[in-house]
Length: 313
Image (cartoon, rainbow, N blue to C red; front, side):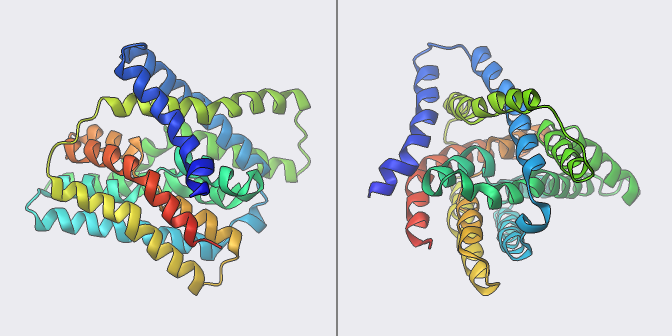
């Protein structure tokens, strides 16, 4: 029980603070949007830049850990896609719902919960997962959606692939990751950046997670549980139960070290992020299901994250 109050609850109190402030009208929608834009477009990319620049690429990119996490993620996509298809949703809706099951909130919730449970030194596995999370999953989701939309349009594979890649490379989080990896490689070749640069980056990075959690709470206030409740339940089950269960089983099968198991399972146990809703909104597909799934799964994860923490070494 102490884990619930000392590890999980503080993260959700910040999120709830943003929710209550918005609910009571103490900040306008435009102010919440500004906080969220600062976090998503500026502070979080700097946090990822800093983390990628400091990562030991050879030691931290554990293939078994990454394979276990992403096998669970893509199984979630398949469950969401075919579940939506079985319930009679059109193909584009199926892709959007699959993406909700695929895209866990690895950064805003996975990082602070792991840090509070195991310390900042335990985050190397989280950042290894995050380093390919957005580039891989956005590329996959956009590519599948573009191919689905292009049925009968006679577009080449190269055209659709370039359209998907262009959309991914314009994402601020991906830009932060790629810039950090570039600096990481340059540092191995002798590049030394001044201490003042890293001090400034650290100041912005420390603001990233509190601002993002607060803004996420404000954004969640706008959502209302509505739409196809069976699909919302499917998305919640895929994100909060099936993904972490598959990841836990595979990390043990692959002999992943305990630190990697913790990072992979806790990240897999996170609910869909707001980006899952933004993906649905980008294409105007299954938006009510996506919004409701983000809201309901985020609320449920207060307890499910506690459950998965209790199973970890």
